[in-house]
Length: 117
Image 1 (cartoon, rainbow, N blue to C red):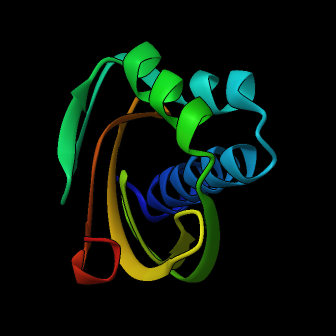
Image 2: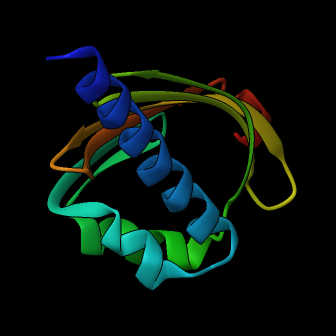
């Protein structure tokens, strides 16, 4: 991959993930859904989801809010450090997003769950 293609790929990956996060914050679930592959997968501390529609339906109920602290990008992978407001508790977390064809294919979120247990 040429340097210019790598930079473009990384820029696009960052934009897709941040658009996804910003859409969740704005409760624009239609825009958030457009950033996801239909068969995307999610793995988190409290469970897993398969399929974009299932994931977005859960987010409509939970209405988490994200405060991004740092973004790392390498080709089609984006890592975010963020605070997630989970309805009364704010938890420092890390999300690792993997993209394919400029959409989120999978992601994992890790955090210490003790404050919400």
